Image (cartoon, rainbow, N blue to C red; front, side, top):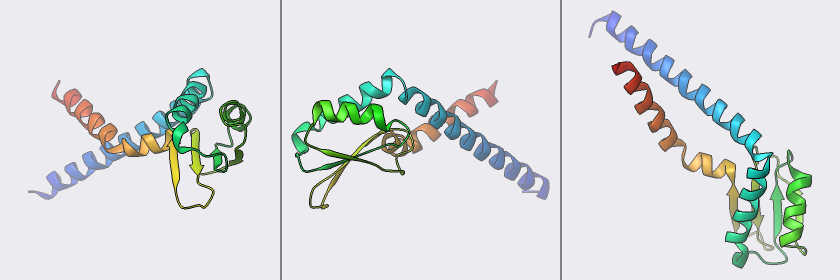
Length: 135
């Protein structure tokens, strides 16, 4: 390949990486905003109810700082015996349930779901961009 082709491919790759980064930021921003509404409350309830049989009264339930007061009320409705605390690592929302003996945790945060699906999201974005370049 010529030097110009290599530079062109490098610029294209850099532009794609920038688009993916912008897409991730935009997605996280929208999810965070959405989580603050009714969808977030429903998501938390659903996740806690799905994991109800695995949660004991002694487990500590970590919540996002951004939605702590609302989410704590939801937790207390479902699990009145459990203590709650803020976990700054939860950026979007949801809960992390830590067992009393600290031997296990259940991560039911939106953050975890996004991270687990990051490669699929990026692949979908690549396909979308390639389809746009074909036109």
